[in-house]
Amino acid sequence: MKAGRDAVWIERFPAPAGSAGAPSVAVKDLIDVAGVVTTAGCRAVAERAVAAEADAACVAALRAGGARLAGKVNLHELAFGVSGVNPWYGTPENPADPGRVPGGSSSGSAVAVATGEADLALGSDTGGSIRIPAACCGVVGLKTTHGRIPLEGVFPLAPSFDTVGPMARSVAGVVSGMALLEPGFEPGELEDRPVGRARFEADVEIDPVVDEAVDRALAAAGLEVEPRFLEGWRGAWYHQQRILGDEALGSDRWLLDASGGEGIGEQTLERFGRSASSPGELAESRRFAEVWVRRFLEELGRTGVLALPAIATRPPLVGEPVAGFNLLAAPVNLAGVPALSLPVPAEGRPPVGLQLVAGPGGEERLVALAARIEAAVGSGA
Image 1 (tube, helix red, strand yellow):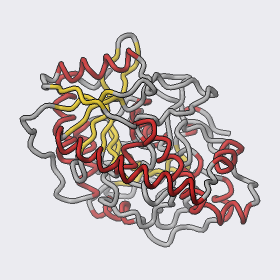
Image 2 (tube, rainbow, N blue to C red):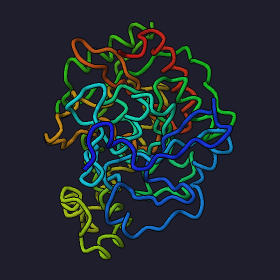
Image 3 (cartoon, one colour):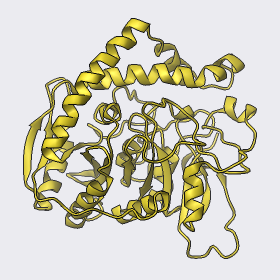
Image 4 (tube, rainbow, N blue to C red):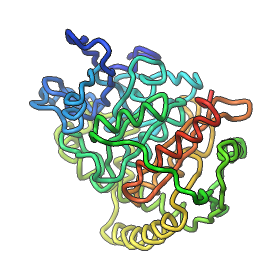
């Protein structure tokens, strides 16, 4: 099994003639590139897949914009997990916090840009899979509004939540990535209104060092901050994960049946085993989601942008449990809205991820605000 830097890339592409100066993009191996097998980070998929006949829509947009594809990068198997640990292709080393998980599922995407092996990367985010590795590895990652970036040619996990977005070492890099995916994209105007600082019930525990880092970054940027109490956050996480698991079973049932579980990692199989829900349980989750999302969107309408950590703690050591690691990320997917993770300095630690969340279609607002914070605190290093 590969390890460390060797575990970042599943396949590298040679630079085509005349591509000097073009931005290089690492593509999560969940996304089709014409002529290349999409493995989804899973041996059972790799053994059954054939080379993609065409680029995914998002990859076609990159090529049309003049980007150079650097290769396909590793991920948490089937994108069904948040640690970035992969039993078949290895675990990319976290360059910001060695020995700790790189975060998933877009682990290779985050590490490729963090180490400078690619200018940009494409990741996917279904329950935090861009923002979590961005926060772990000290880069910027943007989860887009559900449905904004086409998903044709992207291996599905949970279609109700799946999104594609860019990752880069800076906010400007993420803006460049969005402009490739959506020509004409540019930051919006900063609004003269307070940023909502999310606060939670007692059952959402956040490391004080992480919370303080977020507050200091907002203060350094000279932003007016208004505390906002968000009810039902853990419930939103729980019900999002239940719906996600059910949809993942639907997306990958063919693979489980065809392989009999052979070539699928033990932890992934265990998660599939925990994901079966009854019709009544799913109905309960969808009822909760309908009410909670309506209230959350109303809250976003009042504040414009909410600020909170992307992850609640320092990344776990490789091999440690990661249960609940996406507690601060997955509810955003339930609402389908955009969110960005930005590295900001933390006392005595590597940078932590400051998460900014906006209403549907608010990516332009997010990158403008993130650029202001980034300018005030630096790269987070």
